[in-house]
Image 1 (cartoon, rainbow, N blue to C red):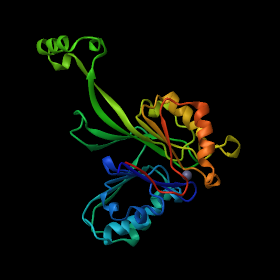
Image 2: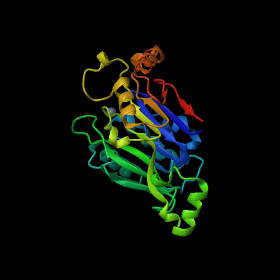
Image 3: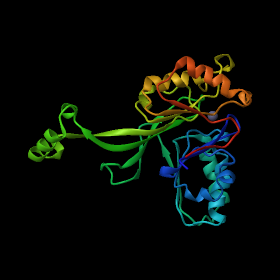
Image 4: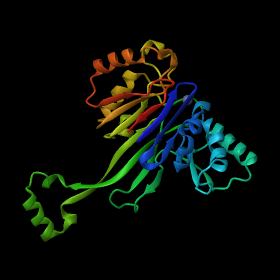
Length: 285
Ligand SMILES: [Zn+2]
């Protein structure tokens, strides 16, 4: 399984990205739905401190200490620096769990910070997380995250040349003369943000965007995004593969598909669009 998620606006949101063993946000139900897979998580990235995104940490930290599994496996929790609710939760966890068997780290981040995931830093296929600032609610610091992979490609001036020509140039001038390094965003997670700045997620392969509101008229405050706004962010950002619509309000529980499909066909994005149904477990293989 590549993705496992549960997302119902106001109640609970989390998304597990299994290739890199990352959990984005940790709403309640995360450990009960993930069960023993909870032990697979290596790093948690929190977008902000609202209850529906962090309440699951309380049981998860406890489960990793008490259930059957590797109780020594370290867990790192990354969160937006100076976030009041998360800092208070962290203090609560420290005070009430003095005997945690594994090393539990809380690491504050701010926009622009980078967290190394695996592979030799700077080398081909090394991966990292790049945090970017988002806008959600007043007085609450919030972050989005990109999974970034270091890659190598032919320099533009060599792209029209034949295999043989390229081989000859590489032989005489060295491989470094024909290739350049670049960073590919593989997966972008925006949390509960209002429409993301397309530049922050440009050319990403998969964009996971808030789409709390499927109809423009239902949004009263500028706190979240509508599906139309999210699609336009994706189009402007040049999303390569797909967009995942997350955090949909339960008011659309019965008709989310029809409403969403209408907007999607109007905006006609050049990528796939997947919808996490409000209040139902979502899996991608
Ligand atoms: Zn929120």
